[in-house]
Length: 267
Image (tube, rainbow, N blue to C red; front, side, top):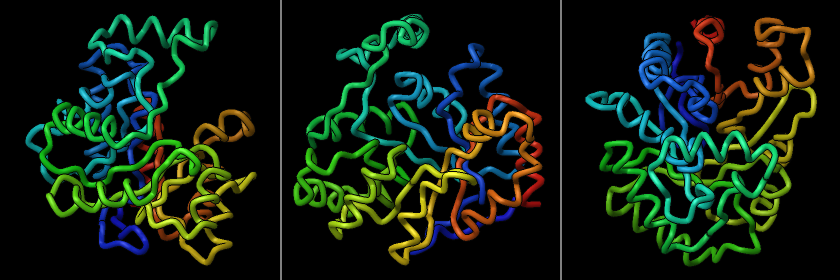
């Protein structure tokens, strides 16, 4: 798989990034690790996660996989946290909340906290889970401009870079409206922007309308399943690459077959 440099940075990674949002739907740790190994073999060099994904177990799985693989890079996030205030390390609790949260939303609803204190605490936990001393990219997860003290966050992020805890920082959101508010305010809280996009709704157009290049986009696989049930990935792959020709694209899959198809696009 070809490597790209994320626009407006010097960060180099695989064109496709492996997203771990659905990784914990594979109950077997052995099978999760096998899928990650296959992704690496197919040329994926960057992996995206969050303490909210699998309530910490996504990061733990990724940490097991990343051990002794310094050539691989990783993104994690702060701002959204598992619904259990104690951050319990219970796999059964995670499964219970994920399953019954579809019926009782409060069971799986994330804790939203944009305090520096909790962000710093979460980052230290994430670094430990991932087995890393330095994080390649740290993103604010689903940021809300009204709830974030920009100066306070910038001071903290700059200190993390200076101290060698992170290399790059930015924001990630499912909502284009949230990210657009930061761009319109000429906010300096990001040098990497991770935005949801699709080939039909083109949610990330708010970025290019500001004469900025798309850096990291995601959402193509989920929109394919929801709105193009009769099309496979190969049929719209050209459109996907046209949407983000210069940046990186996150794909989240539990299928080895899908991994092989995705990797072939950039051979």
